[in-house]
Length: 96
Image (cartoon, rainbow, N blue to C red; front, side, top):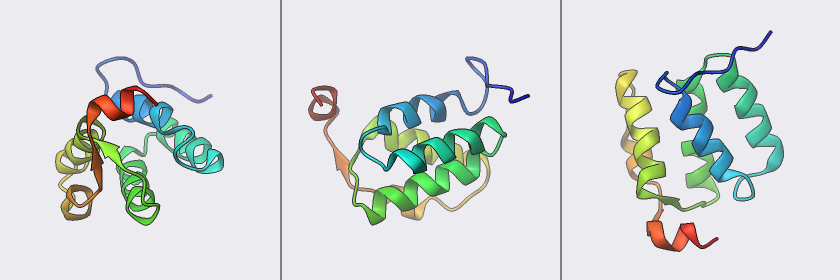
């Protein structure tokens, strides 16, 4: 049985981010990352989102990029690539 994270648990912000990325990233990737996140692999998911955003390129809002940076920082990971993600204003994304 897949256990979903509860509000306040690590990964909750990543689940929200994945939902926000639906339509901006390939559907298959979002679905696969959702399964990995449900399997308690938040660092792997954060890295994959960063790579997809850079390769796309898929611009992220400041708050979306901050979720990735916070997740990677908390795990002691390098955040250089996450900081290089193209950013778009919050207001521009909220109208999409």
